[in-house]
Image 1 (tube, helix red, strand yellow):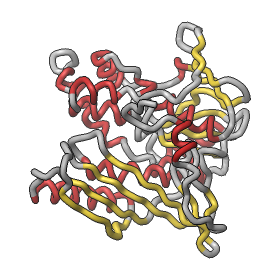
Image 2: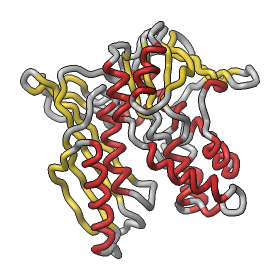
Image 3: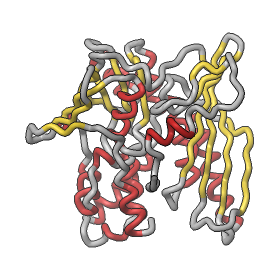
Image 4: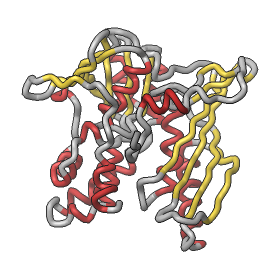
Length: 333
């Protein structure tokens, strides 16, 4: 079986990775599973929530990304991240300035989120074209939700808009946009880096007590996140394409590069499964936290469906491949 860029196929993960967990432990409460981005370990009367993530597809603001992606995964449990470790792998030609840039970005970002960096490892690594930063975030919590806890009939909410992270990456790293998208639009799109965190909105949503599950819309975008959550929760879904908010900047970038914004990596967009009838309560809490939220569909039994604007229905049978990988191959991003 030939593997493609991006996440491994679900069947490969299930067969070769998810069951390979070493020694058994009764303290492992949430074990590795599809669509669930953190593990939970019993620690006395509390739970230790742990998540790791790599940053591999960006050239700029690597330290900012590295902290935020792991922090976001912890936040989908309903808890704020507290501690972080990092592994920084640098190309052989990296300079002291490169080290200082990444470490200072991580320091500022962690400080802004209330996270303490407790250690890690840094080295020059043969064969790399760009830095790779891997982070592991931790939190101690008394309660949590996972992406596998959505219920039939739950409303599906997303915060902000679709394709946030991909919009920022494309605007920063794709020369193909020059002359095809208004320079002011590109400038605004680059600022989408500032939207990357979901920590505040996730904590606010969870505090309502109306949230059954949450998931960060990373690789595969909004559609990929809904697919992963539905699979983890053993449910189907119906999404309304017309209800999914797409920002002007995202629409312009995706149109110029022929990308689907619903399948474009979207860290910064939080997927929330909400008890039916309590949608407005959760939306108000998210707005109070400084973000926005929109109902885009519902979880149900049966098929996983996307209702397009023209009324046609697309059945989602596999995890979508992220649109960003098209550009990595074509443009060497």
